Image (cartoon, rainbow, N blue to C red):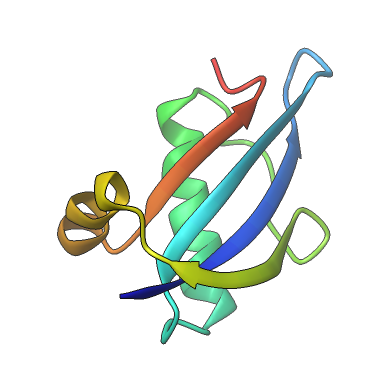
Length: 87
């Protein structure tokens, strides 16, 4: 399976910047869907008041799916790879 990686930066309520990737099947190209996944994730982190647009979330590249991403992608349609300030 090939996946698309969407590089995402969101300024949190405390001013720090969350950096995470939204990873989806490469066929998913509708940004409204991608941003919806990002908003779902932000809700789980108590950051639902933040916008998620092209300013915060951009397509980065296509790569082969990693095994630990695949189950979640098959269940939810996406995987979030947390990198910085996501706690």
